[in-house]
Length: 373
Ligand SMILES: *Cc1c(COP(=O)(O)O)cnc(C)c1O
Image (tube, rainbow, N blue to C red):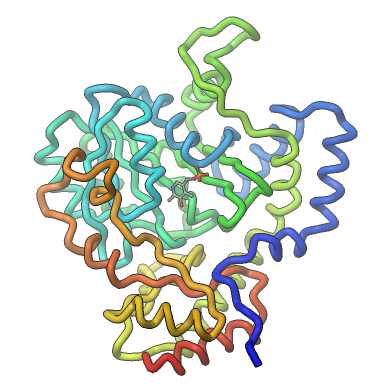
């Protein structure tokens, strides 16, 4: 008999886990008659900022817009350089080009985040003046913010944290998103905190920057119909904000469940043939993804598929090798060896907080049966 499939991700299960609150929230908004940038958005912005430990939240339409808006708010534009990674969702790099700036891509460390040594070398040899640095807390693992902030602060360069995979992750007791000047979060349905559609948010402690961002997200208005700044339109809608308010109280518990599943995988699939996710010392990883490395990645993936286990590859092609960017985007002087190796070796196992222990065990058994252990 074929066993039921364990999907790699399950946004519907996330909805069902909060169904009553979400259904009530939707009804409340529909009956309220106000659908864009209203009381639900304002409340969600404050509740999310409180969760992160930041002063302000600025809701936007998606994670890519959050990054673009943050860069605009920081005054980054044509002629400016922005250092970030190539081992990330393409959105991180796309946002830099959306404001007309030049992305400079550097390698990751052995925990898949911006390598401080690569950053330092790129800062020393940048082809254009560097006006921002974007570390990505990839897979839910905080980047080495202590080293990155030291390099940035010494040069007065603002740091924009891409927290799209790390809502609530911590490093040295501090929540990611509170290290840099500003942080961007995608609220795409499969993220640790996800809407039922597109959404994004920024957090910052900077009052002046916050005011500028609120204006820039809606045509640069300060007063309705009068643009003080050339802005964009990237608003979070009331339905998504209300849904996110219903889900936010579950985020800490969901992140803890992700860590529990990760610990079970660690113990269950450990083998000398594989590299399992490392945790940064003093970090609280939130396992947006559980990513292992193995030389026969494609073989393992095919065998897991036969056993009904969904997997994914985050990411199969580094941004600097993708057709849209290849040969065109400047790279850091230390090269991108780890990035290029990771693309051929990484595999993301099923990971979502509603996964049952039975499903976790089924994944472990399937990995073992695939002959990797
Ligand atoms: C998802 C994601 C984004 C983009 O978010 P969208 O909401 O899809 O625009 C940006 N950066 C990272 C690291 C992501 O994982």
